[in-house]
Image (tube, rainbow over all chains, first blue to last red; front, side):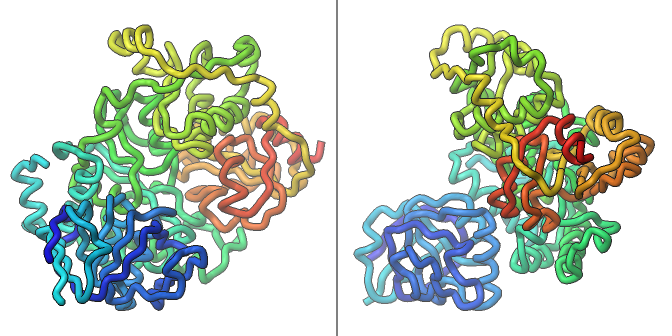
Length: 130
Length: 394
């Protein structure tokens, strides 16, 4: 199954899908040292974003969140790729400076993907191999 | 987006990997905001200058970039004065990190002006396209000077500095600069006696109502320092990046603007003077801080006049740009003799200086809005005259 979206940050990444319909704030929401979601109110609280294809609607919170994403990449606990419903500047900039492939505006339902998901941030293609 | 040969070359990495990444940032912004093309910018103001805000990850990112600014680019206030931070009790651990941040920016060709008022030290003309960051500077450039800038984040401003470009969207486009909400005062006569501080308090009230809409004020005649206070406060209590004051700010004199405000319908809100004055609630204070945004030459002269021959009885901070120190040495000497501390390069919001300072009195509507959240202190609003009176124990 292949979906097509809009290229935001180039590169290719694969991993298990970690999906949420709740926006994420990286500043204060994700621990840059471990990649674990520490926002207690978030449905993914306690889970790690490291190596996952992280799908969420859009980012929120402080613009410093872009640097937190850079910190995740430096600590090798960044997501393998990011899929947003509609991207905004915090996540887009964070993904670009951190080298995390990213797409948004997929033409199908991301929650329906299963198995290992591959995101091609350069072409905007997202595929699931089962 | 439509790319010219220079834009394409940047994206293809012909100007190096750092500029390629920077152009990718600008391209992503262009996509997010539906820009059709990139435009050149005349100058850039870079935020994300205090270690207090960007932290270790931000510092690491800056250190990884290898390119120099191609247009004049100035730095926002940092977390402490470059000289004399020891006397102000700034922790050594913070200072070391802040110095690394400064050095990283200087290596990128960003001038360490360390001020939120770059418009006092650079030429900005009506219609100029800029990529500025700090909310009050953005508001002043757009509204008072008639230049055109969106409110940039740290990385996007740096991207513009290193490429000279910005995506054309938002406030770069004339039709997006027209007013969306109109403010009137129930008693416009009262405003004739107002100082900068009352205009700041008006900004606190109006910004909360305006949100991110573009306000048009009717029936006011503020000078430039009053406009500075008004805009800075609205950018803090709301997200106002541009406002107009009819027959005062430059764009309101354009014929198409006059026609638009005569014909277009918009929400009209009457603000009560009593609500503006209500911002000035009296309470005991433990420190005074003025200069948010950094003081103009006229404001420095006024502070010196008020403090001449007096002695402050509590910590009294005066924030100015380093470059202003050179041109107002005499006035600043008068201020220093009162015991007030003149602090360049930083501000009460981004330095650790005011953290846990108790109750801080300020003449700034912007500081009044930010001090509780950013520094955990209780703010009290006062006119400059009141700040001096309280600060000197009168």
